[in-house]
Image (tube, rainbow, N blue to C red; front, side):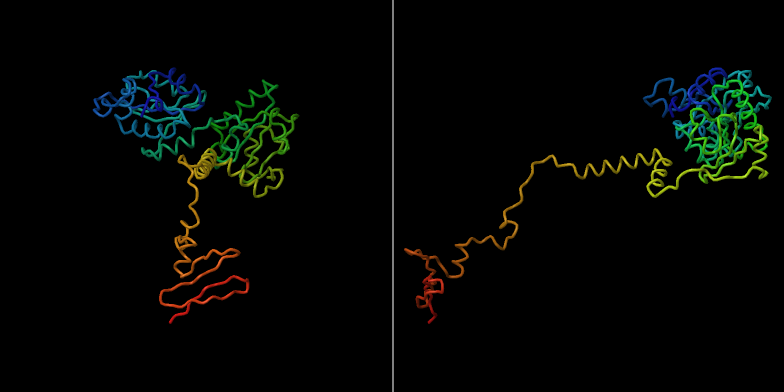
Amino acid sequence: MSSRAVHIVPSYKEAKQKLLEKLPVAFIVYDPDVDLAGNSAIDASGATEEEKEAEKLIQSTERTRIFGQVARKLQAEGSFGLLSSDTAREEIEQFFDNGAEVPSGGFIARIEDGIPIKIFDGEMTSNSFMEFVKENNLPVVIELGGHNFRFVGRRGKPLAIGVYDPEEEAKTYKFRQEMKNYAVKGAHKDEYIFGTMDGKKWDKFVAQFSITKQSLPELFVLDVPDRTYWQDSSVFGVAEFISAVKNDEVESREQEGKKKGPLDEFLQLFVDYMPWSLLAMFTLFGVTFYLFLPSDGPLIPPPPHEERNPRFKVSGAELLDQLGLKVVEGDDDKNLEQSKTDGTKSKEKGSDGVEVESKKDK
């Protein structure tokens, strides 16, 4: 494990700066029993002193080891930090400034700016913690766009999408806060993924769900795989709309759009399974290119006909000799003479006027 997968952070402020700099969600681990006890394997590695120190901390307890294992596997998808054992109690309490109880011992938790900390309370195994990370690595309210819509829409829950007008800043801010509060404390918060979308930028997309600019901001629910949505401009308020959907007071409708053919379905699967589908395509292309790539050696011409067919290696003269025939040169034409030591010769003319000497056996 290198410090690139797990950052060592000594304070609450540095944790927010380092871990939430590029991603809106991060995961932290704290264990009062971590130490820098000697480890010959780590000491003998070619890592820097900073990396060796981080690795010793990560390997020192079961909790930090499990955290490190998952961080290594998911470092491309999340941000991970370890609070050192000498972190002041006051610093740790700042992670729980929303009134949550501070654990007496160590903990693993999810953090997001402006959102209460969420403690991992599952079984202390790599698989259990990995599931926790995968389920909680999205912001409580995520901004949706072309770069992430399909990924977010296929995470197993319907999307509660708040469409806003970016030019109406005051209304948009109030609407976002209302959605965020419901996503944290709402009655059905665990049944949906909450997101917002720029109604001006994506006006053509939201139009197929009966969303108009005049009604913004507005919330609707979309089940992406089933292409089903719930929308009603007459129901105001996030909590009120979600309750109306749950109570079947808002009728479900089918998303507008053309019917997909086999090619469209294939392209959809290709997009859904990226980057693996892209990797498979490049692998197939590489193998095909390699198979048709010419050899580095010289081109060898095909062997002569007689070498490819050993039965026909005998020349014409040798063949006549084996048959007891030879070509006799004449003034006007060629005569074939058949000779044999124990036979008699006679001359005959063939139909073409060629005189042939033949011999008869005694």
